Image (cartoon, rainbow, N blue to C red; front, side, top):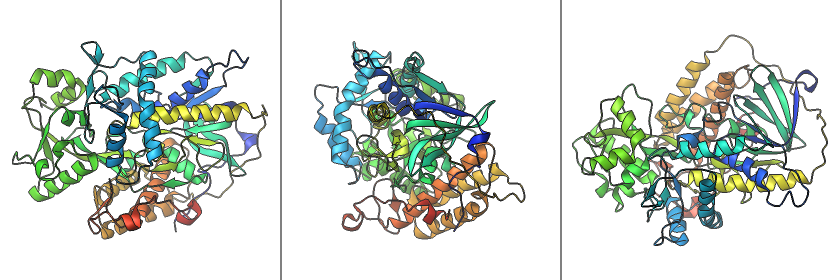
Length: 549
């Protein structure tokens, strides 16, 4: 088995700087900043003579760089008079392939309108029509219930408002360009993190409570909609710290990603199909009608798998989005960001067929949390894409992700603040140290290994999986792990590679175990859903078993 260490780097408390905070939030996306704002709000604290707890938010890039900021579609919520909570709940359960937790789904759906109202109060400018919130529909939704902003730049606008509000709070301190190397644990309890800061180097942050909101791991694939920051750092750090991870086989592939040579894999929002776009093969035949009665409005897993089958059937590297039958001016107004990107490649979204294919988009699995955001490690909470909360099951319903970040971010903020408020102000350094002898012989081309890993994962662990391909992926990753995980790196690219390898190993192991097809996980050798054997979560084995540390 490949080797590894409890911590990625060596450290001695006497040899590094220290910082103390009451609550540490790792991640500056929607879940992390919503948690921080919840801690700041703490209604009634002034009347009780209480002060707001000190919150430190650390994010490895600028605070504007997160998956949340790149979200195009919007936030789902029951806001239209003809819609009902029961409808949104049923749509989520249906998309989730039998693995959603109904109580979690109901909790999140019922909180959605108030969370959206909070965003509006904080200055988010959602699109409107005739003085009311403009609502659109996306795949898997039975009603128009998605609020959006700037046409197709909802995440950017929501994060603008949240960041602005967070910066005004005197108790919230934000450190950007700060890489979280590992979580610190003492007696199996989380007590903070070791980070790397520009101009400072490594330092230890001690916290009464820690909230993990570090996002997903889409960069484990060559073809992904995710920004470069999405390397699974939080999941991997939690795993090394002893937290339970589950359902890591369920990587959601977005069906419609721009496929143009020279282009980054730019997301074409679900809302494009929600507004009436068709999917056509290379012969301009509309193929989704034969795949599912919901056609282009089927959930993402159904559409992505149908596209792969179509590409194989036609021996063509992509399929096409067709908006030519829709009102051209309305299309260009509704999707200005998508229109601009396509225009840069000589494509007019209203007049041309848009080449697309699936790309890795959202990790459905992750760190196990309960309804309050507790992980299995005391002192550690988690929210957002880094988690497996029970909301998404085996496949996330479109526009439920930002919603999950809001609801669970707020829950973590409430729970962590309450726990921290009952802890003494003991500004003490624990006697935690990391000592190991790293493998130092020879240099490594980190970029080359990273690219090889991402290519292997896309070839062997993509939309369609089969035993032989999974075995090849396992061999590749195990080989790289043997000589990468034992080393000590001193920069972000090396730590990200170690985290990506750890996450890839968990994903492959999980995909090998689940011998059925469900949600985002499609096994060509086990093409049927098997509720008798597999209507359950898959919990990853401890790191000592899987990584040999």
